[in-house]
Image (cartoon, rainbow, N blue to C red; front, side):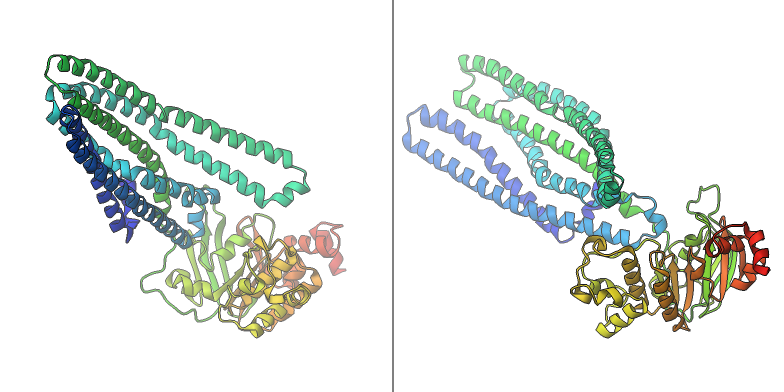
Length: 587
């Protein structure tokens, strides 16, 4: 219940709305509980004495009570819907805001599909709990207490039936709830897996079609879908047992009351109208217990969803700005001093080990290495996408942890290895770099990134619609737009994480020339092609998370075997190994 209580704090302005809804349910319940008393009087005095005015009088009273109960019920529905959906919207907003504060390390704790489920399905479960559960949550206990109280008031002897039957029903319902409770948490995990399968299948639909793996994807979906079906069937198989249990106890109570009540009528101890009214209270009391049982079922499922939502809200953000954080990055110098890093604290091996690297402001640096050599990991420490496990990373001569995160990341422009463009127009995507940029600034950035070449040919130009994930343009065009977007930031440090891999060499040369016109910007270029870095001020060779060598193209070509091998495999066709090729170069 602590998880539910925590989330109720997000009601905010809807708290009053929910309280009004509860008050309306209370009034409605009281009105309905008055009706059996009126029925008993109508039968015992009106019908028994053939008193038509009395019957009409009681009938009007019953009609007024029923009408007022209807009005209060309709008003409750309005207030409950407003509170439930307003509450759900605030919870989703809180989750989304928290995720925006997550570092990459935090995001590694959750699958994307799981986060989507927690912001949609789990929130919907809570909303349904309010819509379907708040009314019986208020109505059930009121009807139970007042119904039993009025039953004892009408006939205390006959009301003793409740003393024996109510605990039986309560125990049976408790056993059902204890069985069902853990199943709801498992059910939501299976929903996560289903969403993950759907997401992967739709995101990679082109690869699926290219490799003709449609049947395989269908089988994978059928497996997880069948798992969800079986889990749901098992869960709700036990959950619906409350209905037959309720009916068994209810009909047992009715039979007992009819038996004992009939004998009391024959003995002159009870009037027919009183028995009729008493039966109405019996049904209301049993119905109230059923309501309470259904509420507990809803709460049980809601607790599983609330726990999952609170996991998102309670996740400790691993990267935060200091209270007195520095707001200005003076220049683009970058220094790594004894830096080691691993993605998880319990990881046995460091992804980066003992890195010492000094890049003066305005210098252009190339970064080469084999797959898995931690090239991307190295540059992700500069804008604090991750924090170094050991050692210090400095930007502008200061520890990156001293800067305000927004100020630091505004000063670092990084074009990630995986290109990300959002649904919308070219202009809307470019304005991510600078929301105040005018058309002249947008076109200037596009020319520097060589994106103007294709933008001038497509209908709409800057206002062309890219569609979802920019699926209507090529990989190279996406890369150029991402470069243009980053240039609009006017960063002090510009990082290219293999972001020209889909661009032809001629276009890459033009982009390199445009970047050379930015002398005050530190440029770090991660690349697979040696032609992308051979003209840089220095080249860093990474090998298995360690710096293997640092030097210019000429220095490394003369002395470093790894660089020699890369160079000759790309420039000479790789006919010889590194040493042989180096000697041939000297000859």
